[in-house]
Amino acid sequence: MSENQKSMLPRHFNAAFYFIDRHLIEGRGHNTAIIEGDNRYSYQQLAQQVNQTGNALRALGLTQESRVALCLDNSYEYACIFWGCVKSGLIPVNFNNGLVTEQFDYMLKDCRARILVVDEVFYDKFATILGKQNHLEQIIVVGETVHGHKTYRQLIDGHSSELSCANTTGDDVALWLYSSGTTGHPKGVIHLHSSLFHVANSMGRKILEINEQDIMFTVPKLFFAYGLGNGMLFPFSVGAASIMMRGRPTAEGALEVLEKHKPTLFGGVPTLFASMLASIDDANMEEKTTLRRCLSAGEALPEELGRRWEKSFGAPLLSGVGMTEMLHNFICNPADGLRYDASGLPVPGYRFRLVDNNDRDVASGEIGEMLVSGPTQALGYWNQREKDLDTFIGRWMRTGDKYYQDEQGYFHYQGRADDMFKSGGNWVSPAEIEATLVKHHAVLEAAVVPRKDKVGNHKPCAFVTLKPGQSTDYDPVPELQRFVKDNLELWKYPRWIELRDDLPKTATGKIQRHKLREEINQITDRTVT
Image 1 (cartoon, rainbow, N blue to C red):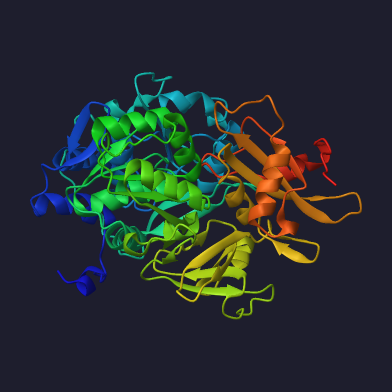
Image 2 (image 1 turned 90 degrees about the vertical axis):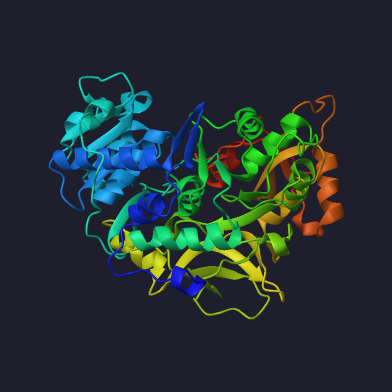
């Protein structure tokens, strides 16, 4: 099949056939699909349980386009339930399992799911709200504790392992993902069957160059767009294996998986990479691991961190830019043109504009807000027309991020549009200051926000966490300020630096700068004259 043929989809298309059933037809049924702990599951086993799940859900009376809420951890069961829904023409609605009861109550009512499938470890978050749902008909529990509800094993027991795909098109809705909801309630983001194919074809095949022999390990969870692409779409598009890791992701846990299961591809976020390097003290890990490519997204990757990672693990760390509304990365550093000082190049199939505050294209080399268009763009937000109008501009979508593009075509991240500020009449990019701070040998993480000085002018204020084992016998603030002054223009150095044990983050690992901005009025004044 040629590259052009691969990118063309038939009118009638069901993503589950492409990502699961196709491998049995093409002779990859015995390939390992999922590794979870000491268990390995083949594509043949996965396909059979996907079919059982689809049949069981249909037997509950669910019809095509019925929504099924999933609150699960990364696991073989998650894959079976997700693809069982997709194959049956049902719509899995993926919930972030780290949210709180109030948010789950909102999302269940918002999406109008008829079925909730929940891991037993998360059930208590739902217990007090289940009786308040008008659309919810049944709860299925993954695990042993039933809470009076049927377990997933009981649900599928006795159902046939043969199932025909629902008669869907590429334009049918395949899944919902909820945005992180850092401001207001989470938004239901609607994606199509065709989008699953296109994200695997663009990022998976053309950037990661994933193949059948690869083993992919992703730390971000499957209910995130980034985790879904890394953990299922990329490996399942070629018949490769995916490692599923339950529980809270830690540096120690990730390192254990790298050494035990020897993945060749690894997806994470900058916070995790920094913690892993700190826990091994930048030791040479190349002989203990088998990585050939690693992928970073969620936050801007500091140049120094990328270089340290490649030196320690012997594998390039490809930084990328994506968002829930586009399903995965639309900018990424290619392995054959990797630049740690840039966010990356356009992923094949995507188009971009950089615009000013009036949505007019900026001149070449100037900073502007990025608009993106491509084949994986969401259909829109569920039941939030006002948000649609703010975000989706015809075929273009606002990212809310500021960039400039250099002469070689590489994009350079300058920060969130609402994070950028002027100091002394000059624009300040928090991301640039943060990247400089983490180059210092003592700094693990940094976040920069604007703070008003005594005369009301905005100046940079930095929140910093130090690497484990750093001495507390001296005040590192003056040294860090001098370090920034030596590496950036004078107006960019942080007038205040607050040392913290950790920084507030979303479940995806993104630093919550809005929470730091809210703290500004309470922090101790450490102005240096």
